[in-house]
Length: 134
Image (cartoon, rainbow, N blue to C red; front, side):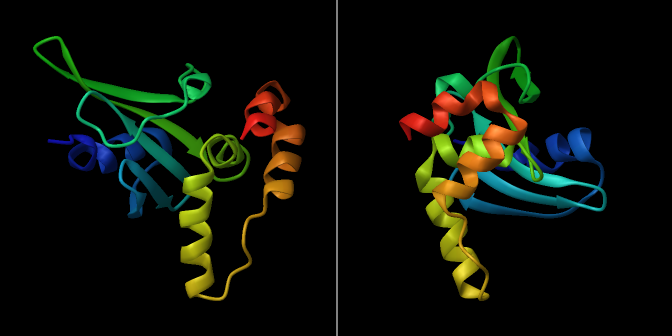
């Protein structure tokens, strides 16, 4: 059983405030909207369906963890909507493809790889290697 859905709103509230919406993009990855902020939250754990790239499992993106009797259930990593989202989309093209499918349904512009790399170069240049290899 995946624990990610059970705690996603709590993790998002701890990171960004009261949650307006939390929609699953792909299993284990949610797009979260709050009054003041938002972005993507990824659930990582032994029973979670999404495997987050190892270079992204750093304290900079760490949101919170839940355990039960000392056993890890789920750890959440957050990628805020202004800058950090690009790191997630570069490392996981399947997430970018899912986001683009959703955008296409309402006539939005797709997020192209070049834009993702440009955002990383501006805000997260230490993660440029993630974008180059994806």
